Length: 416
Length: 96
Image 1 (cartoon, rainbow over the protein chains, first blue to last red):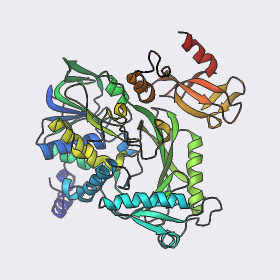
Image 2 (image 1 turned 90 degrees about the horizontal axis):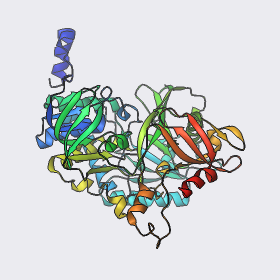
Image 3 (image 1 turned 90 degrees about the vertical axis):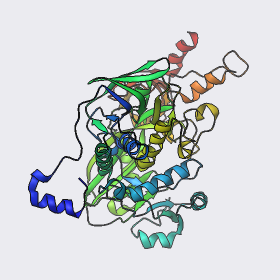
Image 4 (image 1 turned 60 degrees about the horizontal axis):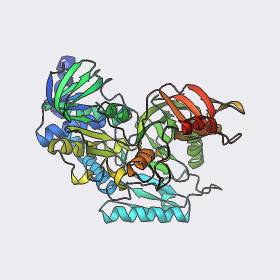
């Protein structure tokens, strides 16, 4: 069913019987042309674009839990394309452009809200770094505005501009950035893929990858063996574990990142604002809660929950940036498992095993990348070669020294 | 998480800095048998086992005695299994 005003009317008049499930819940078939492991944002987007852009519909998405139960439901919903380095700039701008047309494209309300992303700077050196990044963005045709203190004050008046240690001098604003309703992204892609014939199979965990003579022939799962000619792994958080089933050792560590939501308050923050002196990013949801996050905990973890020191650390940064929130109560906090790669950039690539494709290493920037990640991964799988947009996200860039390290932090996954 | 420092006793994890996986072994200096092998350096610098379960990692008690430790910790539960001095833990590894 195509959603629109007519479907609303029909369903309103027809009662619950007129409301159809948005996707099927099929039994796995014995074989598919392509299998995508991971029914999160990236996996579902991949299946959607495989069917839509490449006409490959005999595809299954295998999800070990329920649809969207991983990081697509655990992020802070921020989208932006304010990157500096070649490779990242073009890729994330592609993602931003896909976000801009996404709701019309997959006919689902994902609440794409281009409310602006504002990165604050607190020193001359940081202003210069932001001016450089903004210039790089504009050279690629991406919007960026360097604001002084008064311009920031006009947008976000309640910040602590004269903080004794980290006064706010201004900010770098990308107006096209903003937030997207994260769950709806998974649902929209799932519905779009399903309606084109893709089987989305939930509660189906892979336990092994069959390889014969250097070629993928299928996967062993908790619901039996499924044969396939092509296998795409989109299992960020657990990439090392799934890749190990094919004998691959990845330049990745799994770390826990916590996020938080406060009790609901009246409209307060119109944009996404990030603190430049610590790691803190915040926006306000339509329900009124402040949604925010900060650093990863810093140690390897698969636990999907963090520890209290980082809760304190993140909240301290938030209160330093906007003291007015100091008496807000936290409603919830949660943790997601990040693929922290060795240079802070992702991997979308073929592997040495024929028919096996990797989509991993998203660090904590995976949500904003969802559309372009699916789009590029689908291209890589369908054509058996990377698209120009992910040609720099190769697995062998670490071996050859062509790393893409935005932070310049070196091979320390817990500091990216 | 509480980490039992051999010198200071059970201390909260925020007193410690974590370096990461204690598994990778640095190749010998260039010119030695393994030092000139780029693959050995690639493996040491970039590749990690990243297990779900028991993980041996380097922590330093920066907010205390400053000793370097090897902590055996479960990455699925955050349970700390054992703590020993890095000096002692790696001495055995060099000999083997």
